[in-house]
Length: 150
Image (cartoon, rainbow, N blue to C red; front, side):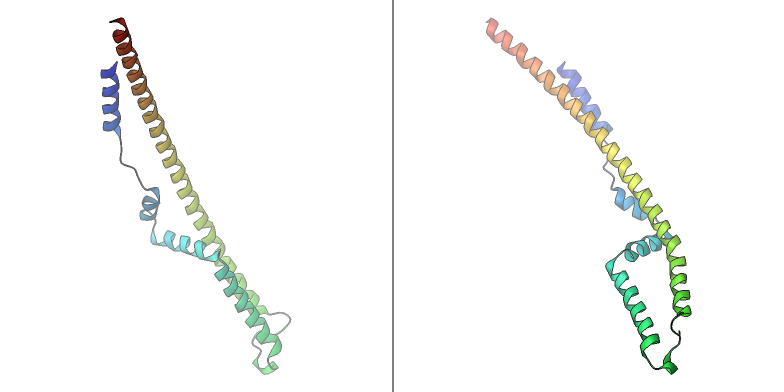
């Protein structure tokens, strides 16, 4: 029984593959455009981006409401130019955010697959260790019986 356990341990060691870092593999397979989309997605969802947009909007609207009429470039109450620029920003950000979310989804799937592989390897190793421990227990019991018989 001991020989079987040793060979299964050796088989386990031979079959061991190196651990992969999914995060690095994912980053290495991204194209420049995908990296750009991920960068945009990562920065658009921050308080810093919100504050920039908020400050820009506040300054724009304040300038066109409170400065003398001759300095208004986007007259109150329509703010047509501001609406146009805001809509353009939204139109360009929407697909980039969706692309970034798709990339994040692919990355999450790769991580889940890697976690599954690691869990399966762990289960195999645990079973092998348990078999080895059972073999040791049986061997110790056999030795104990022989010593008690003498």
